Image: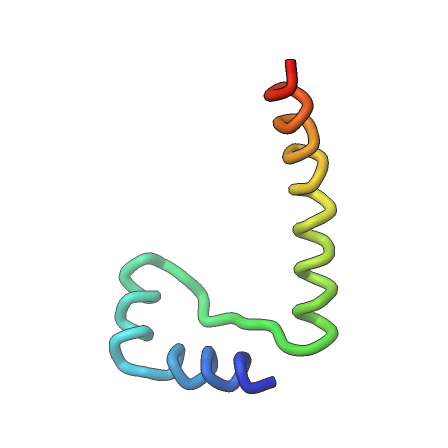
Length: 59
């Protein structure tokens, strides 16, 4: 999980912590199987919208 480690390191910087606090963000990230599941879940919600747009453009 090189990418996850890079994100974790970036989120641990003073600047990132201050930015997240100013925007009311919560420091949170997923790795491995949890990330894969999350992305699959997001894609399953996005895909039908994309298909509707594609059909509408063909008309």
